[in-house]
Length: 590
Image: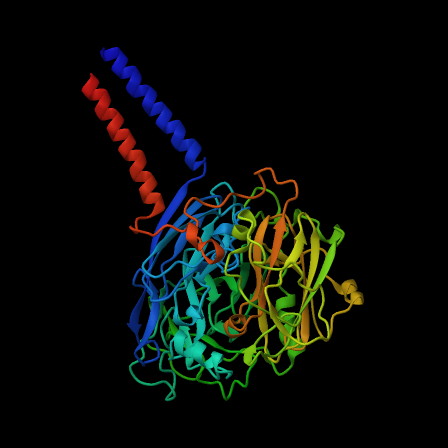
């Protein structure tokens, strides 16, 4: 009897271990609970309602390592629907987790939804943020760091520490008030300031009110820090600089760059960068850290400046005097464009895998399609102010695209997005790009709007091969960088200019293409690429998750939520319960 019990117990434990290994794969998991709620804060000295994650503004760091499985259980404690999106995270075969309206039904108030995705073959600096209802203007954002595995070296000496900077323009009105302004057909006007990690500016002169809570970063002399900078703002490009310190650029949005020193650096809306900064100055005083408005009348926009303090441990006193100014004169746009053109791929470094990330010879691949996406200043369509791409102001489908496909919902969207702009009246539409799986496409972002814009593509990194002023034409391809162009997911496009990117369409799903400037995005400046494999065999696209939410034409399939426990916690609990019940029965039998 005892031998039988031992065999049963050992057999079960072996099966349990095998089941766990198969169910959860060989790669580790990291799990987070994100409780998204309102709190009251006064970042610019005015009490206002902001969106916090786990009571924090900005939200907590999401930290993972290459190939890790990430589980994020999001509890919506707002008074309106919510989605979180993960710009730059390439969810392989899994657009179900992308967190935008074309791919996910919103999380209703008082409900939860568990995102689960793998950060496959990725490293670098990213952030998460809300994607609905202009909510990012009130917060809900936070940093993401994806680390190299130990077996993959980083292409620079291990830093002595890390500092994260979440910068962005800020209004003292909340997102509901701001979207009412846009809905009324008005422009938002100049922001009220710039925040650094949710804090207002240090009182560097009399223009800053008394009592503002500012940030101080404590460092040790002689040490080198990796500094990650994310612009999560609404619409303002920001120049980032640390007084008297060089910024050695090393990474952007998951790709190592050819290393170059800058005294200051323009970080556009939605972009993320890593720099190495060595604390090599004397400590006669502290130093300014500045994030100031760029590509505007900087004299008029003086209040749109964030200021924090860099404090050496042996500092002899507070900082004083005027703020450092950027070296590049943006009154000469050609000069300003020199900085993004200097960002090149580090072709000798490994990325997330043990092979040089520059080994992909993108410049030798035939282009299968060209899409010219032209943006214009907002215009009135059907009595409302709207923004457009190729004359189409996007209206999100009530039923997410792949759910509509899987459940044979007709008319949810159209696959007729034009490959180039036409001279016809602008219109509202659910028009998407019908992209070809394994195609290699060229996308030209043509900015005929009046302000600098950032364009983003979900699910992909693209090669930034060209950037100029004027109107793009075929002969511009002769000036492309076909050797070491940086690969990234968000790129600036100057007003009156264009940026050309190349994308290898190897990730099946429905992927959002949008402007990251929140005012234009809210007004409809976006579309989607629908990429399906005609020979789908279950290996190129994941099935909908078990916890998929239903809405629109499929809302009758949605069951009411009666609990708010994390999916991962439920599963863990079930497995533990199974183990306890089996062992109890074994011991009872024995």
